[in-house]
Image 1 (cartoon, rainbow, N blue to C red):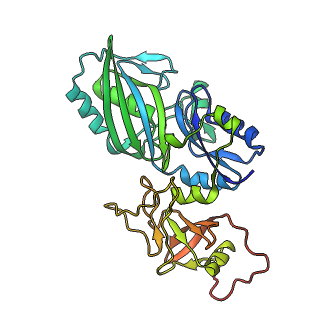
Image 2 (image 1 turned 45 degrees about the vertical axis):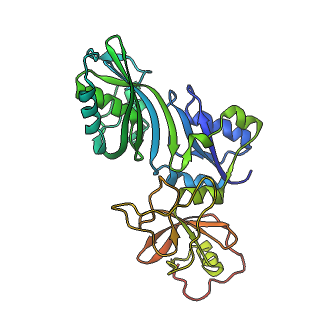
Image 3 (image 1 turned 90 degrees about the vertical axis):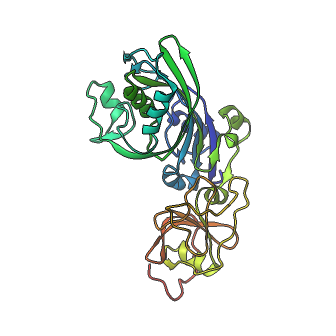
Length: 341
């Protein structure tokens, strides 16, 4: 099976692991993983890596995500979503739009968020949800997350409840269930999530996702080079630098003239200058919209002249350090002068 990413439209009622198991059967390999869990209730974009592309997944997990959500105000639940047991609440029918907007505004930007007790976070080596279901719910520490956009759409009264449709764009690690919980708490009514659809993970959008039924008929895989170019800033190397990098040698950041625009439909390749984010280093092209430009901490996809993905790298003190090497180094090639690896 070739290495690459499969963008799955996860159906409701399946765990992310269930989807991985299905793809393993379809692809005929056990080397399959995903880039960020979706709860069983949730649907939408699940990025699945096959073969060497599984090594991209840990870095794709860190990209921003977008969701379409429905929040029910007026009732809290044990899981902060519709799958839990009701735990209280107060009538939300009298909440004004101004009060709703003010509550949403307080949950927009960089915020401190306590993850739901029923989550996959590990506490003492065990998943929080397992401890919670065993009656030993852990006290989870608040985390700093960023909600870039929390846009309220349709608001529908439903008896004593108020159902709120919202579009949310957020950083990795943000729990939409916790936003629903915290919005309800701030308004004094309680709240939980009744529907969630992930519409994007970094540059990968719902329009590119395939149902499991479609994939069972025809596997739709984005090849590894195109997948990396869509998700990360791109650096095109000389043949000599590509060879050395494939051996894990730290090479100087190329000074000029090595970048090119990615023309894949997954990655328009529009370089951007984002306020507060350093511009790409010379020779490095920004990735698709929704992916931050290269900074010293951002993984960079480094390519050989023939388009082969050589490695994901990061910049340290003017040199490129390999995070993950994908190209097989030439067996008989010497490193040549200047190696320090």
